[in-house]
Amino acid sequence: MESWEYIQKAVDWIEQHIDKKLEISKLSNIAYLSPFYFQRLFKRMTGRPIMEYIKLRRLAYAVDFLTRSNLKISAIALKSGFENHETFTRSFKEIYGVTPTAYRQNSFPVVAFKAPDLSTQYFLKELNIPMVADGIVFDIKRIQQQSERYFEVLTHGFADAETELDTVFKPKDFTGWYIEIGEYIVCCLEGENLDLLLSEACPVVKKYIFDIWEKKNPTTLDPNEKIVIYKNIPDAIYVEMHFKINNIKKETLDIYKPKSEVQLIVLTHDVYVVGINLQNSGLPISYESLGKMWDKKAIYTEAIQNNTKNTKRPVTEYGISMNAVHDYIVGREVTHFSEQDERYVTFTIPAGKYIKTLFNAELFEQMVEARLYDHYAIGKQWAKENGFILDETFSVEVYPHETTMLQYPEMYLMFPIKERMA
Image 1 (cartoon, rainbow, N blue to C red):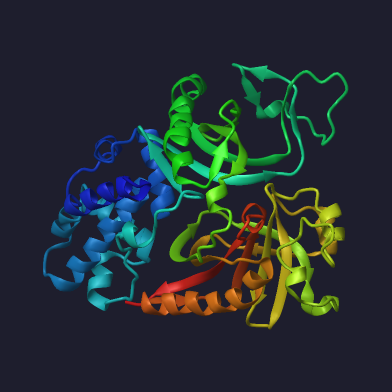
Image 2: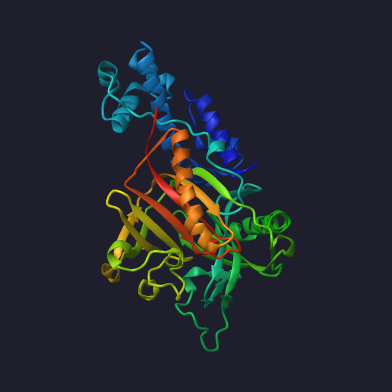
């Protein structure tokens, strides 16, 4: 099954048992996942924590009962899955700003939360979506390691992220572990227990990579290469497994397959961008100046590259079209804004729902010229056909370093969603 199918099972169960007591342990069993992985995957797929999602769906049923039936408020509370009248009324007012009684009497306009059909939002891809193998949830991404990384101390036989050295040059008499420059497939996973992650989850992921993923993809990996880095994050332990790419399979080198994918995504966190305002800079705007923030030969980005020390890795460039004021900001993603960023323009891409259009081209200049303009139209048409109203104040062009450097470069566009038509 694809990762979305595990969560769709839980979504369907919730709809069929909305008036019953719904527990995480039961729902995780239905999804064939542990409670830990289930809760994380559910939030990622639906954009909501599981219990918040259930409350919003129950309130949506309640809105329908209040509008279409003459049932008493207490009866509606129970039929919608709330324990009692008081809990129902408190939750209803928290979300909609009025009590159920006031809503029924005055028909205030509210937007009820709809259950997602995940099959229309997620498509079979091998990178940048969660995967599931033997109950372990993980992400697969492809990165270009531009400089070596050094780790001073190893514990459990693996690299602790806390020991990474802040240097791009190999220290004298260095005896630790390091990641070479090159291209890697990186698997990212989380867990509650470090020993179980390293002894049980990592072997499952490695087996999946070599037994399934490698056979389906145009790359061969170094069978002896497996660099594991771990660190503590809130409520969990985060692990990265790095598999170095040896080469691209020869039979696929000369085959170009046009790619064009459109989907609804949820950006779960704000994205911070530091760059320059092209309209005010007086600099030429062309494909040579887009998507190449990391390239020292880029016509205007070297200063930004040298001064934004808080750049997020791997490097991603963003082009932000400010449609309302006919302006364009180009910059790179940073982990946070700092005082040194004051000399540049800063922009925050807010968390929320977006229409994403991903595409590729044979040449970089083709991608950022003709295909870029085509996919602006494709994304907006898809939104219209699926009943989404876009926030027209801005749109985003995304140039991830790891995909623009592929043999056939890829990028994507993001259109913020304002609301969905009834």
